[in-house]
Length: 75
Image (cartoon, rainbow, N blue to C red; front, side, top):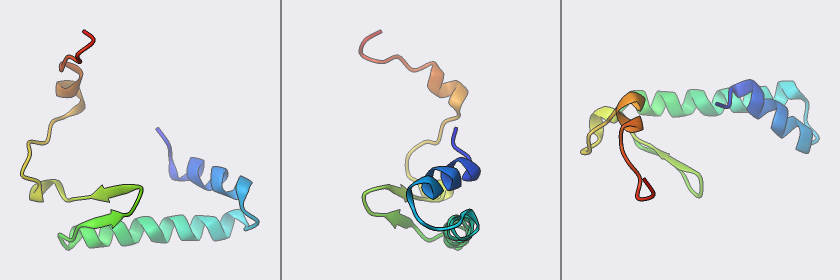
């Protein structure tokens, strides 16, 4: 699993900005996503991911333990 520190380290290795600047950008980005989701707003980062509050989803939300029991076509 990637942590914020992992993301900051990876980005700082490829951009000419200090880790402090990158940390501020990453932190502010996640704060903004969390704030919007707390207000029941959908957040879409085009080409990356869509965040939706689980309470608003029409599909069933399952835990990882339940997910492990599903079989794939190869099994």
